[in-house]
Length: 127
Picture 1 (cartoon, rainbow, N blue to C red):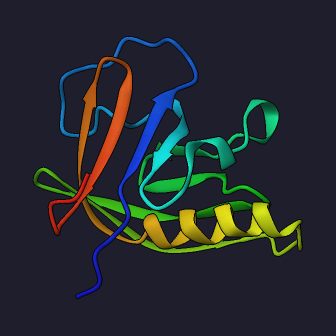
Picture 2 (cartoon, rainbow, N blue to C red; picture 1 turned 60 degrees about the vertical axis):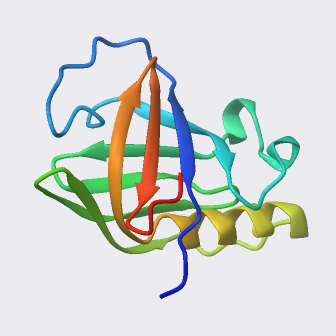
């Protein structure tokens, strides 16, 4: 099985996060780290890569386009289904970020929220 790239996202809005299996739901998270991508290549400001989890739906901005899909919480795991979205073409660096993000957001993860950050650890154990 191909190893999944890890994601680290930070919360854009300062919200109290309850201690529950779905504590990642509600806020919009901004990508701050993705293994295999130089953090300097990640867009910032209004073009930041984001993820929002709400009632079984994931949505956000992946570097060039908006995306959406479904997810399920199974015990302490987050299972993200196939993603769909707009299909605009962008500059090569934005497309590289987008492709990496979409690949990384596929599969089963162990979500951990600590210090206002959401880390998604792939089943393979990579963070």
